[in-house]
Length: 492
Image 1 (cartoon, one colour):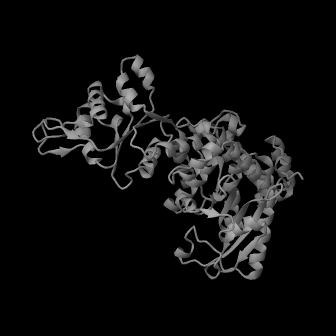
Image 2 (cartoon, rainbow, N blue to C red; image 1 turned 90 degrees about the vertical axis):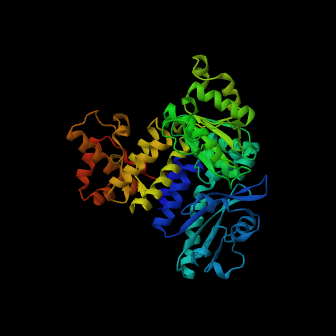
Image 3 (cartoon, helix red, strand yellow; image 1 turned 135 degrees about the vertical axis):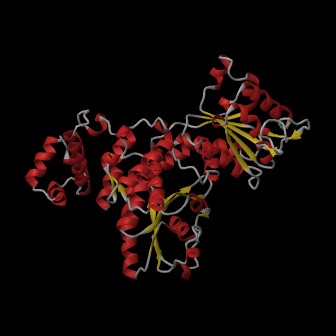
């Protein structure tokens, strides 16, 4: 495991790319659970958690430690490792993750991550039913890993410092329901922090599947009326003859089938937030009525004469080019300017490649629980396919792909052939563009060879034994697929 972590850290430039695999391997292979990496923010003199395996985003957000506070804070302050056999029996332990509330009383080991002149962070993990020798062993393992990831942590902090004006609000207001550490997503979190507490209209722009509804929920949750209702309407899913009744309600007898008075979504969202998705699909007549609500804060039910006051914050979203629609006469310019008070553009997944593995790890854990599966890792070929694909359906497409792969996988490894055919291009698999049996068997054989070489760190003899073939057969197959075992060796 340590050799694989060393190889991983030597082959990438971003800390975010290492955190998911490293913390997952600690849990699965070393039985060091809920691994947490925390870094020191010198600007705020605070310790912020970068990643925590096995903990929800909400649990991670509880970490508000100062230098010297808790075991993690003490380790960062002193630059020396620390361990306790029972967290409940040590007054220094700060249970920000709620471990003791889960009827657990594990050991905790924490080691410093050293910079060029001082401690810049800490790596910690829990060990169940640990003896003193187990705790010493855990500290030794964590110390080695902390040394391996230290260069990535230093580079990460330098990048973070260059973005300091944005980082303050990003750290404080990163939503629990959105996963992302890329620069483009940090900018989105910053914008959420700037506008959440006001009642200003927000227009969410971006391709389908980029998470506009999640951002709307975050704006509502961080806003001034989080206890109020969050009402969402997909304007594209409602027929033109129904949309006005859905939005504004109707009076009894106002049209055939209106057998009683009905409240609309604007009334239902009173004191809360109304989220209008795919606003570009509204008809011209409905656009006029929506404009009146935004300008005057009043509307009437269909068939009614009484003016009703709107007390809902309006958040809209669209995947369409509204400015182009204005030129074509399909969308009102005055309504666009009313909606576009504070626009937030959500980047497509292909522009935030750093987040793909974070999202993949999250979806694997989610679908393991949902479908009672045990996928623990992803093969090299599968990772290459995920990173090479252009993701026209964005995060929603990635989620569907991972659910399919988790259901198909029969072992604890997610292989490339478990992914949908749309990802298995000739470029990503280095195989002829053919749907024949021979080509598919060749692709599967190549994946198994790559996975065996990765596990054995380029040792062909060990890889051959794991595949239950001779070394000569292994050599012939590596030659046939033009593989390079030295790619997986560790260069010191």
